[in-house]
Amino acid sequence: MYGVVNQAIQGLVEDNFGRETWVQIRNRAGVDQEFFLNNESYDDSITYDLVGAASEILKVPARNILIDFGKYWILKVGYEKYGDLMKAGGSSLEDFMFNLPNFHGRIMLVYPNLSPPEFKTEKIGEGHLILNYYSHREGLTHFVEGLCLGLAEMFNEKLTITLLDSTNDQMWHDRFELLIH
Image (cartoon, rainbow, N blue to C red; front, side):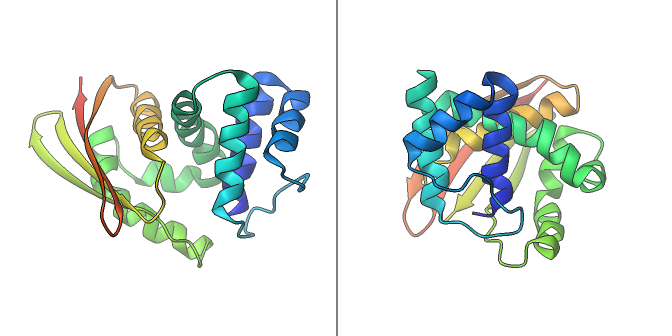
């Protein structure tokens, strides 16, 4: 993953628990880097190790950390680093969900080696969507849940999100039901 992801984990921890806690988490994860370069690619295991260490140190399930990280990614990192792109995604959560493929296409101009997930959204009814998430990375289901909750908050909308199923054939595939109210 790109350094921007690990920078965001660091930001989430430091903003909520302080610098000392971040150093403890980094040490527990066995991560030697004191800082991550935004556009530098790092092994995915670093990110997973940081989440695992945060779970241990903070005594919070990894699921909760990933959900909080997803929200933080949207509400803090998204607006600071990609504000114009976020605003161009639409004027509602539903619009944004349908525009996600375009968003990742634009992000790939900034990060040319990015291997982004794929999102496919189906409209079932008014405010009722099915979100299909595909990725070669497993274990990010709750991060996606947090992203969706962060987007709902960004658009000042209420969201109920339910994981319908997860499969891992050649790619990780999660299906979520989104109820926007």
